[in-house]
Image: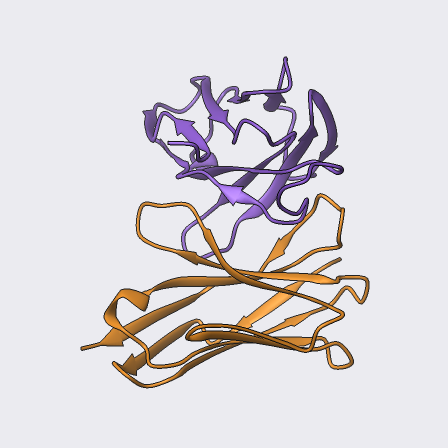
Length: 112
Length: 119
């Protein structure tokens, strides 16, 4: 069945450093890839997304890249800040569809 | 607050009891989703509504689970005869429908979740 693998499960970085989280999806029909940030006691919040017709997208300190051939996509956070500490989830779905498959999450710690 | 709301935020119950959770989506959204999230895992899809029609159910949704969206607005998720394995965070999300001028049908907005503990 459909699957999204996410690595690493835990990531610890020093404030100001960059963080990279990588995901791989199995369903080649997937064409929409959102990233969510979940803070303690809250639901996931969308931070950025990318569609399969685009290879890269950037929003301030956050960027996502997509390699459709390899079925890989990655989240890049630059100049990390303590408030970036949270759990990050990648996900994959088909445009207009209803089912989103999530990765297992990456717990990011940013040390001040 | 115009976001997705869920009630209650926390529920502690004894094994065998029935529980019901409520989700109020963003008012303009006609798509509504329920997910279950266990510790250290990502959300797992449970079921999906378009307006009042329940269009898809995951095999994770056993016969003890039922979801409704009677008027195409709020939704309820009921778990009958709860088991300890039902302990999890139950998340609701909504997204705009096709044809609406704002937002993408793909972008799901999540509520804060209901944390269920079955003793």
